[in-house]
Image (cartoon, rainbow, N blue to C red; front, side):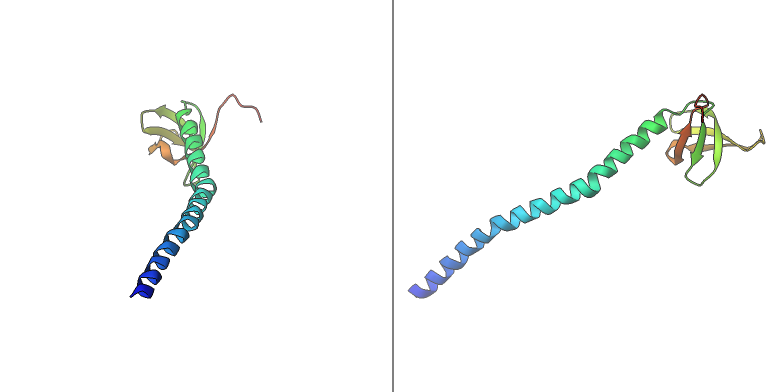
Amino acid sequence: MNLLTFTIAKAEAGGLGALLPMLIYLGVVIAFFYFIAIRPQKKQEREHEALVSSVETGDSILTSSGFYGVVIDVMDEVVIVEFGNNKNCRIPMKKAAILEVEKPDQDK
């Protein structure tokens, strides 16, 4: 009985001793994923939000579907975009679908 108690106590002590390196390893893996995946994605989201908030009337934009257009009107979540030379082709679209913005005063 004494040998069994000693073996159980040794196993419990080994389990607690092995827990600390495992927690450190888990913390390193979580930090790695944070700096490789989560942090760059958040930075990209902030940059896109700044780009979308800078949209004004008259800006040329590229949409996520690949269409180029000129912004006619800007509202809270929606912009009215004119596509092509046809003045009758004005389509409302969400601001989130804007990928690129070119200001009219920018020189190439």
